Image (tube, rainbow, N blue to C red; front, side):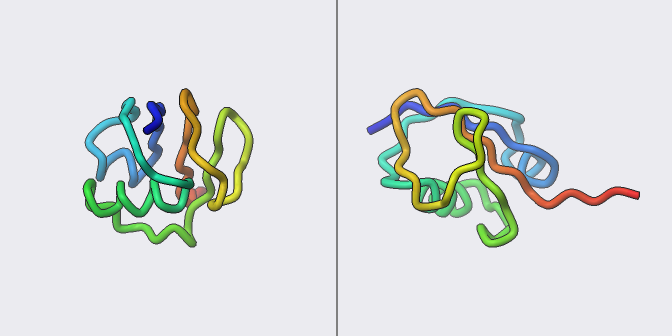
Length: 80
């Protein structure tokens, strides 16, 4: 089990009801973590539409989750 800090932006922040949180997870990798959060928080964006960063660096979805990680889920942004 790992304690991680999560940060959410845009739609994910709205759906989570918070900008950040620290939680304990048994997820084996970032994909499993997002899938568990999508189920528990009701996230509507599929993983394929997101980027993920760990400790200020973009990461692949199969990267293992480690104790103390700072994980940011980054949804698509629009602008004009």
